[in-house]
Image (cartoon, rainbow, N blue to C red):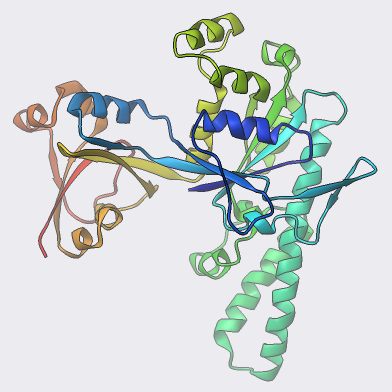
Length: 353
């Protein structure tokens, strides 16, 4: 999973990026003009429980790659200037984190949100119009070009949405239309988590950003309020110092943990687990996926030779204390390939090739 961090200059994007990494390795992305990236695990107490229970040689959590600096804005006379394709460097990401300055008082957070959203819409509209122009030439030359005609209809519908300032993630496309449009990497198709980067006073009970949160909700965007500077300070503390600092600030847990979870959930993913004495591993699947698809996620041979899946819900794993105890209690279910995997399932795939 790749997540691009975007927003107007001086909003705290890089501070938040470094807080999210929490000491993880940060590197420069090849082929970009100085964009940085780093990978962090998705916090999950269920995974931690399994690791502590089984004590494997290797533990592999679900991870998210964050990218900072791939969306460039030049500043001329203190006015942000977007390039011809401001988002070119992050078109391949799966989701976006939009950081908004809600701490300096020099900019209206709601206007800042609208400014970047307008650029997202415009970037998609330009791409749609360019593709429609080429398709129309093809359709004039070939009346029987049925695949092109279907694509033209889908893009024409998308064009109407964008001109009405509606992001494509809010539209009800048919499965066939979705298949046609996904390959374009449209920016307004991507899930968005808006981060209101506030100061300490607002974090501890100041005026809520009601209008901004409502605006995000209307556009199908998730909303998180945090102070990037404090999140960065938390990452500099020792494990012994962190709880005391959080208590003094009136914070239950670092907001970066909630943000990572929000990004993960926005992508419509669930987590399932596999384990043996060598490795405990967390895997991702789109919500609604089957046991056969889970098997293929682990290895293509498992899907090809799928026999059945032994399934234990996370709650029952914790209740019984081990896989063997659950088996003796008759809690493990045998499921066929059509079984829809649930978030937190522990799976053992039986297969033969």
